[in-house]
Image (cartoon, protein in one colour):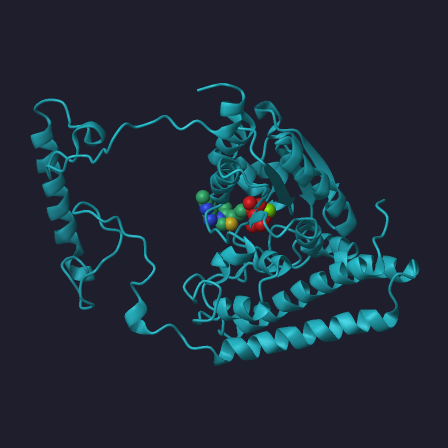
Length: 404
Ligand SMILES: Cc1ncc(C[n+]2csc(CCOP(=O)(O)OP(=O)(O)O)c2C)c(N)n1
Ligand SMILES: [Mg+2]
C-alpha cells in the first residue's frame, strides 16, 4: 500500500474528490429539474481514478477524456461554475453553452475534452502527443477512456502509432466493468484489458482505481516513462460508477448488491478514514472539506442560473465548414421548411433523389471514375492547390532513428 503523502497534499486530494462528488450529485439533481439538458453521464464512484491521475500531471500536460468528464475538468482546475454553466447551456459555460455535459473543454488548462464518440478521443490523444513531440515540448498526454472503448478499431490504430512513433503518452482505461449495460466479459474477448496493447509494443498494468494513492503512484510512473523515455504505457484502473450509464438507465444489467459492495470501497470515505487513522487530517478538516464543497457547488448553480442563454443569431457561430463550393456541413437556408422537409413530401422527395442518384451513376459508367485527389473535383473543374514541393513529414521519433 502506498504511503500517505504530507497533510496538505492529502487534504488537497480529499477536497478535490469531495468537490467532484458533490458537483456531480448536484448535476444529477439539476438534470432532474430540467435545468441541464441533453445527456448526462455521471462518474460518481470514479473520483479516485480521476484525481489520482491529475494530481501527478504538470500544468503543461494534456488530458483528454470521454463524455463522462465533469470531474476530469474540475480536477484539472476548471472553475466548477463554468462546468455547471455548460451543463445549463449558458454562454459562460466552458464551450459557450454549445456542448453540454459531453463536451466540457478547457484549452487553457489543457483539458482537451469531452468526446461523445466512444474511442474517438484515442487518435486525437496520439495527435496531441505527436504535436508536443514535433514542437520539442516536454508535455505528456494522458488519454482516459472506458473499457468499452478498448474494443473500438481506433484503439489498435492508436496503440500502433503511439509505439511506432515513441509518443509521450499514457493511456488509462477506466474499467468500470460495463460499457452501457454490457459487462466486460460479454464485450471483450480479452478481459485483462492491461494486455490489450501488448501486441503493439505497449506494456500495461492493473491497479485499484478506488485507491487514490495507488492511482497516483502508477500514473506518476507512467507519466515519467512517457516524458523521460518516450515509452507509452497502458494502465487499467478498476473503478465503478454507482449511478446508471446515463441519467436514463433502468440498470437491469446489475444487482443492487453489486453496487453496495463497491460502495463499501468508496474512494472518498476510505481515503478520509485512512487520513484520520494516521493522524494526517482531523475531523475538523474533514468537515471543512465538506462545507467548502457544498458552498462551491451552490455558488456554481447560482452562477449558471444567472448566465444568459446564447443569443439565437449566434446559432451558426463556431461551426466547422469546409470552405468550398462542394460540400457543406451546415444548412445555411432560412428557417422555414424546405423541399423534402415536410413528412408528407418525403416519399416523393426520396424517390426523386434516388432517381437522380441512379442517373448520375449511369453517366459515370462510361470510363474510369475521376480521382479527385489527383485531378481535382472533375465535376466542378476545381484544380487541386499545390504550392511548391511537398515534403514527406517524418515524425520526430523516426527522425531520431534515422528513418525517413
Ligand atoms: C462509436 C460509438 N459507438 C457507440 C456509442 C454509444 N455509446 C455511448 S457510451 C457507450 C459505452 C461505452 O462504455 P465505456 O467505454 O466502458 O465507457 P463508460 O461509459 O463505462 O465510461 C456506448 C456504446 C458511441 N457514443 N460511440
Ligand atoms: Mg465502462
